[in-house]
Image (cartoon, rainbow, N blue to C red; front, side, top):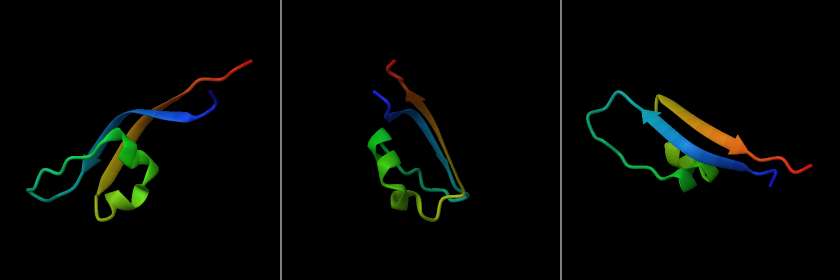
Length: 48
């Protein structure tokens, strides 16, 4: 509860090599160094 959970990740660059990333890479942003665009969809469930 109350934690960001990545559910989708899209990584873009202008190169010709296709790199593979996992949702766990969201928690280590340095892995995306050099990429042109990184988009992540996260969910957060709130407890009341």
